[in-house]
Length: 491
Ligand code: ADP
View (cartoon, helix red, strand yellow):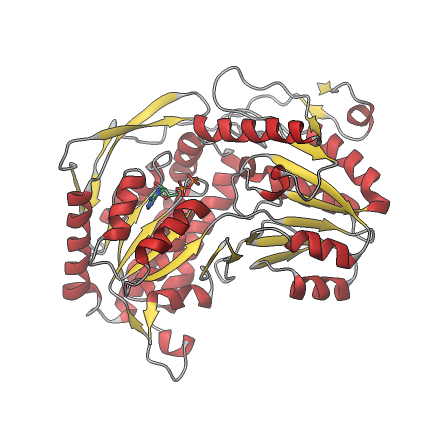
């Protein structure tokens, strides 16, 4: 049955349909009641016997208890990684190492359904995304870096690439399995061993990956996965026997880590916040651009550091774009992450929903005009309506600060110079999008926008062969592609 949403646009341009619910089955997945730390190839209890809960943000129900690692547990994990590096991994022929990495990739593919369902349960993202984006991309990163393991001399001709030793890796909650793959795959391919910590709200797919790694026969201690919150992360950063820290997370924590590591010999890469400009010119294919805007900000509930959260529309087409955007928003389905019809799932945690709602209030108080889709949110769980702020101005906090939710600010512009200045006038520099029919305009903008990744006539496209990373307060270092090998090597 066709459902209209009241507004004239909604009834003429775009309508939401009442789809029969199509929830993904959870019967085939196996979850423990309690998860331990994965150290030296085994699951071991935390020394202090502390555990925390991980919950399903769509139902607010507890899924499992998860071990909290303290400094002593971190030390055990680092010792295991060091021993595995010295005795096994650094001595193994690179082609042999590659076989293990390929095996991990294939096993992720074999268990992809299980990973996708658990990712959506623990993190709140729609199953369509975890199934079609997160999990296949995670497998592809292992495949891609497996290929480089025995070809490093060709990747860096006339230089002698050597591994660093033990890598400490700390990841956030927006792409839990994919971030683990981004970090672990290049570290292993370059001959390093790993201590990885997932975020405290989304530990389950990393722990499932630990089970998979154990089953793969990877030598004990090459990958250690330990859980906990900021204190555990800080213990990894501060451990004296770690050679490299790779961090993805907030700019505040990134700055703290940079201070801790100043003056040490540890290598560091930081992938931090973002506030991307998505720029639509008058000559753009408007319908595709509207889809790109929707994908750019509502994909994964806006829990994407490269989310296209600042929309710049050229004045002549602003009314049309906004009208189409509002209509398209009406057709977005917000709800159960495990339902295959869902476009926007649950916000990852109560704390994050509060942050987003706080910014929505700030935006209203700053004088921007709010527009939200008329959908009804589920009664339980952490959900947020897709939200636009019209007439936003450059000085508004909702324009300057990262919200990390499904909230889009809209500004108009007249000239190329004006939009470049506005797009760059921000502390971040992670990504941007440009929509235009003219190749020359694309080249002009891509060379002048200060952003690490710029998509042209598309948005949020990822590939293991393509480097990713930022400028300014978005961090430094690149992950993915050939560039992603370099931070794990010395020459
Ligand atoms: P977000 O705001 O996206 O949750 P955070 O930077 O707080 O980002 O978290 C990203 C990761 O960093 C998580 O795994 C978290 O546990 C970890 N973390 C938080 N505080 C610290 C810290 N002081 N040192 C190291 N890691 C930390």
